[in-house]
Structures are given as structure tokens and as C-alpha cells.
Image (cartoon, rainbow, N blue to C red; front, side):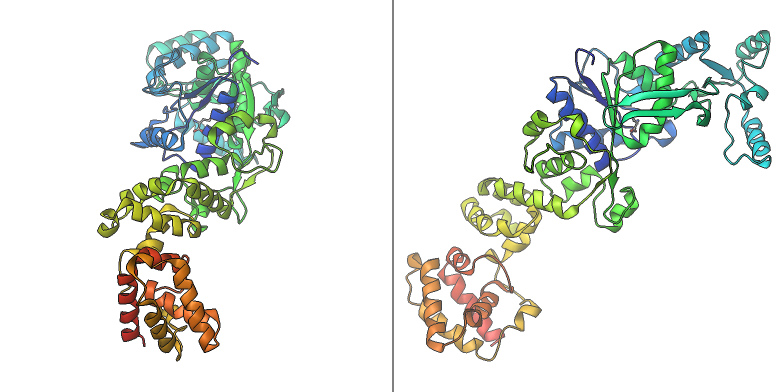
Length: 495
Ligand code: GLU
């Protein structure tokens, strides 16, 4: 291991930060913090055709929202910048030339038509996936087949070219993956990867390797989908004569219905795919982080709840699993409920006020709203659900829930009216849950009926719903005047 741990999250700004990307960033961050190392954000934006405006900003904001702090990156100065690959263009062409001098790469002058012809020819002769490789390169237009002076002439005349990696014909490329153990690939299946494109821009492979080296990256921790690129990278490290960083490829995130969690199947399962959506939908960032940490890793005991700081302390790569991790949305909601309930009611009150469109809740008294939240927060999974569940504390029911109404039976009006008479004399300041409950027990006792017989219609009258937080405490919070008014309206409308 290099002395200091330096890891990077290296997204391409081709879209918003996907939750899979967030998990990769998180594991890198946890690993860095665990080893007192640095977490670097590098923007891999060399493919201009796939560039998405605002994607970089979204990545940075999403990391910030989730509590992941960047040590070096665009806008965060460090000794290894710039951290946007588009600002490092000259570096890559210099290193591509070094590979040519080493004999590890070569110029290729083939036009698109010539490449198409080669593929067609090979397909016709029974090769289903033709490659530009150690065999085909011999009949193509490149600096390995053309005489030197012709190559020079072409270069001087400004002819278009790419630089390709000279992949050996038969070689086994081996490396140790910290998660997968020993990995090997046969060079036979690889093509002579383009390293520098005709517009002078590097491909992912060249830029990635050069930057990981120049930025002193000690560990490359990335998704399994990059495993097949790693042999190319290992060849590049060897060609440059550099030590490769240690590699760790994370398991895929799987959809509950099977297969990799893609944008499409996430949507059909109601799973938000972009980190930003979790923010918009009012998930708790601590919950998402705790959940994602366990999506492919566990500390090896049966603990489940850990703050980001604790995760930093606990995280090790040897406890990351090899197999795909299934995204369990219910589990995420379970985490969300936990982190929501942990928050002080007054703080939740401020957050509810900030997101609600209901003016009456926005203007409400903080202490009162906090009391309401204390009553309902055990029954919701997300912050925004508090608003629906708490609304009856602020507005008399205008309509009554239809399925709840079915519970208003023939004797309900009599029972509710009688209860109303019992609670009417209670002084305003003594209108308390215990008393309200005791009086209800009296009424049902006298009528010889079960609890629900009165409880259900009373709940409908007071809240408009068939379910909700503890009714007696709710009535206490609402106050006598409101409760009596709502009962009268219900008897008039329903009874
Ligand atoms: N730019 C690649 C991506 O979009 C980086 C892969 C890597 O970490 O090497 O994920």
C-alpha cells in the first residue's frame, strides 16, 4: 500500500448522480476516512458528445447533501489539479507520445470507411465480432505497417490519426482485486484500444490511468462494470513503467425483480434513481447513506444503524461482498423512519414549515406544530407524509373518508351525541386525554358496547379519517371548542 491513502470518485458528467454512483462515492469516502486519507473528485469529461450541462453541479450538490466531503476537486484546491479532465488535455497527448516511443502504442491512419470495410470483410469470413487487434492491424494503415518516412509525411501533412494501444497477441493479464481476489484476462479477446482520438482528446482509458498515476491514487474503488477495462489499464501501467494502484471492484446493485438496477427497471419498481430525487422526495440523507453503506457491505455483526462517522470507523474493503446487492426499498424506508424519528420535534417543525404549501401550517405556532409532529411521526415514513397526517390539526374535515364512513352505524349518532354531552362540561384547561378516555369508557360501559363502536365514529367526526394518531391526545391538542364544533358538524352532516 502507498503510504497515504488517496482515492477518487471519477464520474463522467453524462447525467445526474445515480444512486449507484453515490454508493461508489460513499465507499471511496469511507475508505479514505478510515485510513486518514484523501477523497478526490475528478470529473471525467473528455467525451464531449455525452456531456450534460449541470451534471457536474448536480454531482457536487448531491455529494454535499449526503454529507460526503470532498478533499480535492473542481473548486476545491489541491496539489494535483486541475481536477476536470477537459482542462488536462495537453497532458494526455504528451503521455500518448511516450507510449509510442516505448513501442507500446502506434499511430493508426485508417478512415471510417476503411475500418467499416475491414469489419465487413471479417464478418463475411465468419468472425462475428471483428476487432482491430494483433492480427488485423497487420493489414491496416498504421505506423506498424507503413514505412517510417511515410508515417512522418502523414503526420507532417496533418493527416487525421488516432493512437492505439498495441495489445500483445497472447498474454495473460493478471491482477489482484481487493474484493474479487485473483483476476485474469486473456489479451486475445481485447482490441487495440484507441487511447487518443483524432480530435486530440484522450479516451477514458488513457486519461483515467494517467490521472490516477499523476494524482497519486493509491486505490481504485469503482463499480464492477469497469472490471473488464482493468486489463487495459494494467497494460498501460506496465507500458509506462508505473505501479498500478490497488484495485477494488464493487458488486452490482440489483433490482428486486432481478437484473442490474437500471433507470428503466428502477422506475417501474417505484425506486428513484437519481440522488437528487431523494432530496426532492424528502428522504433523510442519513437514511440513504446508512442504507447504501449496507448495499454490498456489512460490518460483520447484526448492527444496522450507523452514522456516517461510525461507518467511516467500521468500513473495510474485505467486508464488501462479491455478489450483487438487491435494492430493497422497504429497508430504505425503514432506515428513513428511524432517522426521522430521531430528530427533535422542533427541528422537524421548521422543516415541515419549509416544505409545506399549506399556509395555515406555515403560520402555525412552532410549539403546537412540534406537539402535533410528536404525535404523528411514528406513523409516517417520510417528512412530507407528516403534512397529510397532521392536516386535521389545522383544518376541520371538509369531507369524510369514504371507507371510514362505512363504520358510522345506526347507533353511532346516539353514542357520539351522548359522549358530546359528557365532555361538554369539562373546563377548557382540564380537557385532557386521560379524562376524555375515561368518559368514553363510561359511555360504552353504560351501553354495553365495544370500544370501536364509539371510537370509530368519534375519530371520523374529529379527524375525517378512519385511522390516525392517538385520538384522545389529538383531542387534547385540538382543544375543547374545536372538538365540540367538529362533533356537531359530523352529527349534522352524517347523522
Ligand atoms: N468515468 C468513469 C465513470 O463514469 C470512471 C470509472 C472509474 O472509476 O475508473 O464511472
